[in-house]
Image (tube, rainbow, N blue to C red; front, top):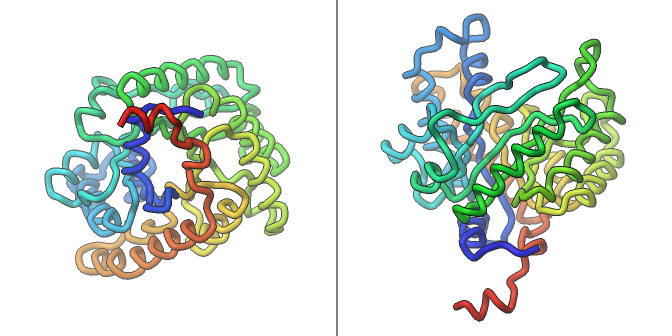
Length: 318
């Protein structure tokens, strides 16, 4: 696959020196408000959210190859305060938090008054687009069209697109997909969406580890996902506990993943903490967790450059 020199340079800025990804996610909005105050998310003071963003990103971005943030809460305060490491790539989320439509036919909506161009001018080295997607949903074609549209905008601005599809049930009577169906949906989603212009796939673990602890099954599903994706893919953490996520990382990367873009598995316990307790947790436990993840990625992951080898034309352009 070919990419522009601008996209190649941006990927270099988002990756570790060995061309694997150890990226931090702190772009949560609605889910973060719920985590801070489950009973009344709307009552959470904006200042509390900003303080948490600064604390997490200040502690962890120096250890991450890139940091994913939102523009509503994270970007301004973390750049202005210096919490975001100057050595960390910057991914900005383009979608609104949550979804529109019926829960069985979810529609992703883009931020108002923000664009890929705004992100580039803000210093982003990548765009993240979350799309709720089920290959059998009536609106699957519309969601595919959105991916194409954003991918084209990213190409015009020479920014890589980190595409994050999230599966859901299209049966109102089924909340959690059985593992065989989850695996089919996650793999088929990669097969359909990655050719539409994504640069890197931010993928869910293809099986629900609560339904199976068989790591041979995990590995087979991850290998199937690797075969379906035409782009490098990185694993999201989905809020699982750290020890489980570390196992998932080893399995996924051994099966072909190029790293991680993870958040809550590393820092979620800091949410209810305050003051020195939060600072201490992030500086010790969370940093240790992220370093362990990054080292494991370097040990086991597939470099993204396997997908994007340097062409003779690019070398000649220099």
